[in-house]
Length: 210
Image (cartoon, rainbow, N blue to C red):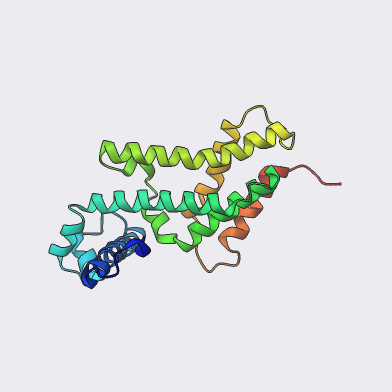
């Protein structure tokens, strides 16, 4: 959008929006790390203020309550992850390869946004207002539909021996969504590597390969 600004527009009007957005993102990133490390209940607005070196007055300017911060982290994580995963999938590839790409991209995003995921383990139920919960449910369903369409395509092409896509999609998501509960960064295997192994396990099962 920057190219649409008038050439003689005041400098401060060009510079202020990114500053505001960057500060908001910084507050959310720091809060996510604190929520993930010590837990939502044990983290206070004062803790976030101290960790960001931002006054409580400024913090309250952006977020009225700690719950508002949690809600913003949750919605932001869902939106960005859905966009990243969707763009990581080759729409011309086979359904099998698309499913593997979905698992890999999901894990890659989780691995690089580790604290955001840990901060939002409560899921949609942790979102406070009914309006934001409605948006969260829509985002979650939209994300689930990415994988459901892959499974549906695999059924239609005969790649997947399944009767319908809903239950297999939920089972697949359960595998990758549980990773934040036990995965730790810098381990012997990356999150993406583990997720791809999950995908192959889901696709090939426990059957013996002769």
